[in-house]
Amino acid sequence: MSREPILRLEGVSKTFGGLKALTDVSFSLDEGEVVGLIGPNGAGKTTLVNVVTGNLRRSSGRVLFESEDVGTQKPYEAARRGLARTFQIVQPFPAMTVLENVTAGALFGGGADSLADARDKARESLEFVGLAGFADRPAANLALAARKRLELAKSLAMNPKVLMLDEVNAGLNSSEIDGALNLIRQIADRGVTVLIIEHLMKVVLSLSKRLLVLHHGQLIADGPSAEIVADERVVEAYLGQKFAARLKEMHHG
Ligand SMILES: Nc1ncnc2c1ncn2[C@@H]1O[C@H](COP(=O)(O)OP(=O)(O)OP(=O)(O)O)[C@@H](O)[C@H]1O
Image (cartoon, rainbow, N blue to C red; front, top):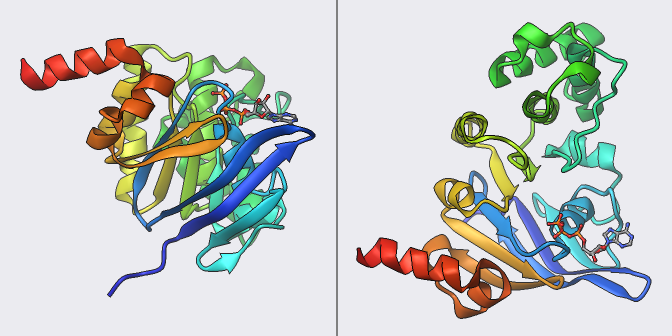
């Protein structure tokens, strides 16, 4: 029996004045999948996430979450449905503590019955991302890697069914990246569907068996990672010949 995809985009376009940020994008995600979304700077990746979470209104097309058309939802409605995302530029409420920031996320996501319940959920998320020891510190004092974890804790406190990660590894060193990879794997193991925007191919390939490629707002490829990285259009648009040559060496050597 085939199940309905958890998220489906049908012919989604988004224009900013004359600029076509997304053109006729269609794909779907099955529940529990971990899918990488790649493409050059300005390809429309963040715009796509913004359209799915209601931070931006699509110009045309349909966004279906659990078969329901959610194309006109507000961001808090997306969060309540279980569509959570992290932001590429992490902006915690600086004057609030780490715990308060995540509690705000839990309340935004609507899964908590009370403030105390939201705080419990927040503590649990902080524990999970390894920030429990920072709970009472002002968020403004966190270094980048910790701010990225805070961002992750905030979206996890929303109890997401689908989690969209927008460059959570950008700017991290390699041991911080290993830590983040571990966390993302654990989140996926819980059955959360993950869409991960990532420029580091090593990272994206170690997490996702399937890749989506955006180029100038168009989805130019969608399929198994191994096929996508060998696709001539993808190499040309994004990966570059050097990467393709290295990959060939890896396969043949
Ligand atoms: N609010 C906005 N108003 C006008 N143009 C926008 C807006 N948001 C994005 N754009 C434009 O839409 C295009 C797609 O941008 P987007 O940020 O989605 O790309 P991206 O693939 O996420 O890039 P990056 O990898 O650099 O984050 C770009 O040309 C960008 O300048």
